[in-house]
Structures are given as structure tokens and as C-alpha cells.
Length: 186
Image 1 (cartoon, rainbow, N blue to C red):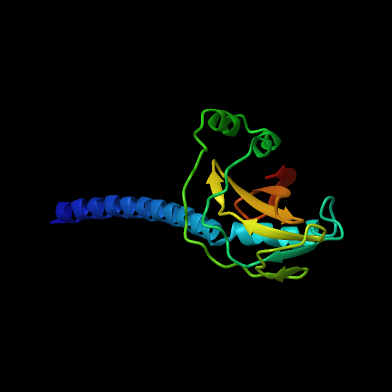
Image 2: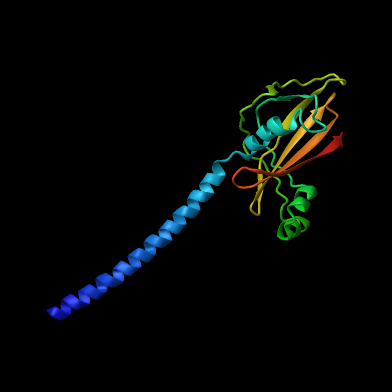
């Protein structure tokens, strides 16, 4: 009978060890899921728009002395990553993936609305005069690749046949790592 208690004690001890190990593994899994969910809760499109409003519009060339209009709706197209965004990161794995075409992501996501803050105005006019000083914004969906978020805002100026493409690289906490722009003409 004493031997039976000793065997039961050993079984309980083994079960206790396995239970502690499983709880530890469960804790690590939940921590990982929680971190991933908090990263997904960030609207990177909103972060890019807010950064444009707070730090670029009327503060950085070529957006000095300009007014910005935005409808509030994010385009359904996903941002296409540009080489300048890759070069700035100095991430050789990201650069290699880009060069091999692994980061090409065509597709559509359901559009959604962003909060518009001053100095950006909520407007959706179709026609503008050639001499105006307004940049009309079109914001594309976030493109997540290899631990970074890539955003694109296209700003149409004058009569809409030219403008600026503004590219953002954003970390998973929503901080702008880098931004740059390029001029386009249609």
C-alpha cells in the first residue's frame, strides 16, 4: 500500500512538471498572439495621414503653402513597394526579396474611412483649376512585408495631371521610420 502511494506521488510529480511546462508554452503563445493583435490594431494608413498633416503639409518642401483635400476613404488598392523604400532600410533580405519579385502584391482590400484632421480638409471635388494650390490625396492600403509596413499617398496638384507620390516606411508600433516623395506627371 505504501508502494502504491509512492507510485501515485511520482505520477503526480510528473503530471505537475508537464502541467507547468504546458502553462509556460501557453503563456508564450498568448504573448505572441497578443503582440500580433496589437500590431494589427494599428491603422498604418491613419498613421501616414496624421504624419502628413502634422509633419509634412506646410512644413516640408514641396508641400509648403498648400491646402490638402481628402475624401476620407482609403483606396482599395494595396501599396506597391518602391525601391527607394527598400534602399533606405538597408535590409539586405528585404532588398533581395524585392529584387526577386517576392514583394509584389497586387490585390484589393475593402476600402475604409480614416479620421481627417486639420489642416487637411474633407472634400472630394473632381475638377480643379490649373493654378490652384491644393493637393488632393489618395491613400492606398498598407503593405506589410518582412516586419515593416509600407504606405503610399498620392497627391494630385494643379489640374490633376501631376503631383507627388509620398512613401512611408512604418514599424509595427506605428512609428514612421522614413518617408520620401517623388514627382509624377500623367
